[in-house]
Image (cartoon, rainbow, N blue to C red; front, side, top):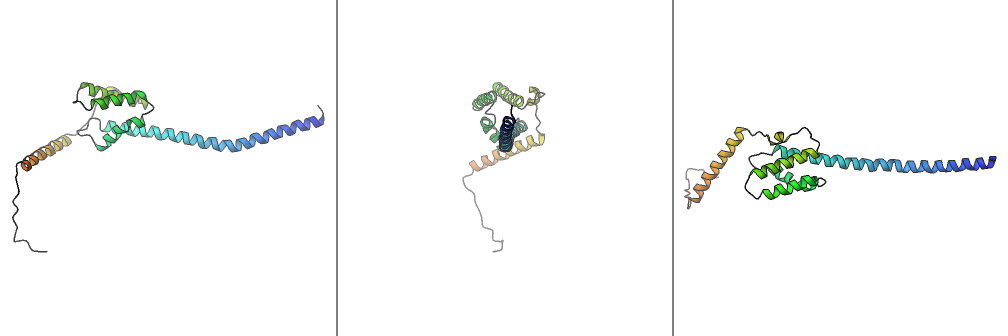
Length: 174
């Protein structure tokens, strides 16, 4: 090779290096930003799944369906949309909610929680763990008391035609 050919070859290599460097300077940060958005989206989705699962676990055997429990149930289709097993079990459970409580409904509920736990990689969580729950006796007593008071108040109001209100004369005028 002649010195002129070597110089031209070195010039071509320098141009190629310049283009590669320029491309790396442009694409490096762009790839970083895209990766960050992808990673954050994945992290947010996993956090939402965990939040929903913990809400369902916390209220799984509650005496009444709380507002947060109802909201969590209503978001299963969206939050677990990438897991067809969870969505199918949720639809089965939803259909069973219109029937009186029974063994099939309880089994489907446990299957739903098990599928969610598997999706979240809670491999050590057993179905017996999912079926355990704690309700303080004071909460049960309070709910029974409220039910009794409401029933009695409703009975009195239904059997009362009108109330007699008498004006008290001993109260000072404002």
